[in-house]
Length: 81
Image (cartoon, rainbow, N blue to C red; front, side, top):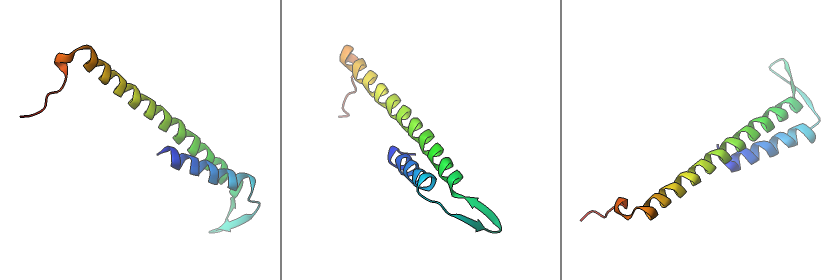
């Protein structure tokens, strides 16, 4: 899940939690939209944390690869003839 999708889930969840005040029946069961909003916000927050951690590890990996080639020029990749 991307950062943008996580932010959208958090925003939709917040709207359902704090701005919507209706109760509905769906297939004979009552739907509490406040709980649906809480669940969407929780999923969005978890997705946001996972996305940020994933991006941080990718940027760290790129930095170490660049340092490795800078310190040992013999390990630099060569172009194919």
